[in-house]
Image (cartoon, rainbow, N blue to C red; front, side, top):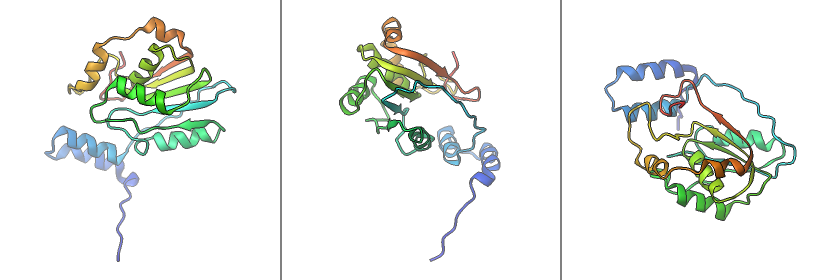
Length: 193
């Protein structure tokens, strides 16, 4: 048998640019861009307390523990000696913030020395957990869709439903020692505001 491989990273920029030339639906183009995986990249270093028990990584809508940057992030954090939990959250195509918060609380040990690192919908889930009075060491959120509005104009019903419920920010602020919110200036889906 003969096996063929493509050097996707070698041609990522060209593949990404050429997607604009084909007549595919935007959702297909977006999916292809995610598969190509082209990124400018950046390195962010957060100083985290020495006495953390564990780190919980919560992925976003349509995410799994095996896609995007999650496996890499888990591995990098484990190199520091921390225990890392990266659960496959339920029903990621149409996530429910309460259901996912219940899942995390049932399956992962959380205490005041736990750090949450979240992406997209995972940030909403973390805030629901904190609203319940669960104390953690810190929350780092990447591209959390807090407004329910999206730059690509698409409707994400499950996100809108979660955001419509509102958040008890006063209670949330009391549940973690620190908060960091990170947005990507080139994010074409989640607005920075």
